[in-house]
Length: 74
Image (cartoon, rainbow, N blue to C red):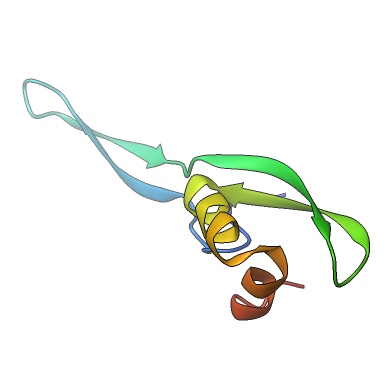
């Protein structure tokens, strides 16, 4: 599975490591992803999502079912 948050759609970004001598080498910035299991009251089952910490905070704030509906997660 790819490194994409299922709520916020955050994904891997590319950039440069810059040394003290300003030599630039390519690198990847990866999102802070966590696999987390939630109980859905509407669907009456456990749902496993791959989320960034921002996605976890959104679910804490809105609730699981409203967040899934708002961000169109299947």
